[in-house]
Length: 589
Image (cartoon, rainbow, N blue to C red; front, side, top):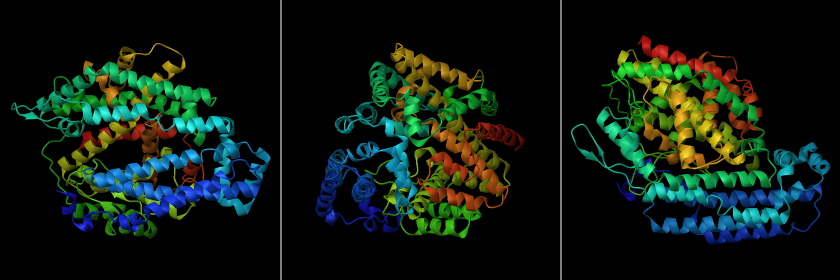
């Protein structure tokens, strides 16, 4: 449908967020605030000045973020609307200019004597700034001179060039041959349609889509490898400029994440890969295949289970499943579902996929493209988890302490998904439906715990090659990725040669050590849901306290609210044990 054909009740109410008629006036106010901040550039700081400057800094950040997010969300509803695109590009440009203008502030504060900074942390009246100052002290040695920081800030405008090139090329320029089904019918192939074809029950279509997609990436292997290697080199240059010992340390240290956690995840998963190999063998048996190939790992093992859920029935199902939470949580959940936080259906020009967004001042809005499938119900539950986390974090913290880190961002979303699937399993007696749900859960383990850790291994090894000045080329990247696939999938599957080019289509490899966090969050969620379902005393209260913490404490400290210590690899071992148990549960159906 066209955007204007959407029913109002199925669209998000962005007008509660911002009035676009105020744009020019509000941008002028933002630059006034930036000029006030710049007055501190050549002043010797005392405690009160530091806090006053930070107050202006966060006031500006709140205002410009709200404007930026509003127009970003408007653009996402309709990319065919040139007016949205033009205004968003203008706002984005002004946002970047403002960030350059005030880029001196945090590095300047970092130069202040640590004793004075610690005095701020010691005073109750400055409580809202304790975490910010703690961050500055923690990262003090990484800041450069004012001049160097301004140069780096200006350079940041082009620092995402490799990702932008990748995104533009793969979303616009890269073309694929049509996929062909068992009846000889051709199907237009894109990255979006590939997700459907690779899950198809038609094996000919799956294989055709797999080969057509990866042959296209193979055709541009040299170009995409050169682009990715430049991304790796940029990461290493930044590492050296800020005196980190490794790119992994650079990614983890700012949030006090121990490198040990990354290595514990890799080691625990890789020591238990026999479980994933067993799942591959199960797939081969259930699909009755002489050979299992990589294009067979996404299709369901359970045929003839067609479940359709209207959006209204999905809302009811999610409410029933999450009724396990307390009234405080459920009040926010009902608000989200009934007060236009959610943009539900697809329309021409609307961004694909789903996300939870919003600004600090707004509702935590959700974008969906709902199609009545079970996957869409889980996506609804997932994004509601994110939005409720954001709601509690924003309501219980000042702006600077609200935006929780990516490291724990997937916990609340995955908790909701796991509770939903347990609810569905407990409320069906149909054998085939149960097997279908266990299949879905097994895929969550394979695609999140296994696949994302496999990506994390590739990302680590490719960075290390650049750090150690080893030879790096498209052939080296291809063979590295192929070898890791062989390790993770085992001998129960044919690891098709074309898979060596798959790394070049993964956008997350441009995010610098991002993917491992999916697996760590998934492991944490397994722990939380197990305790909730077993009615552990006070676990719901602890969970809400965790959500409300936002970024007021470092991520590992936030997890300690839930009595979770991620430096102990037992949390990852437990997740792998549940993976094993889910295989057994499937077999018992």
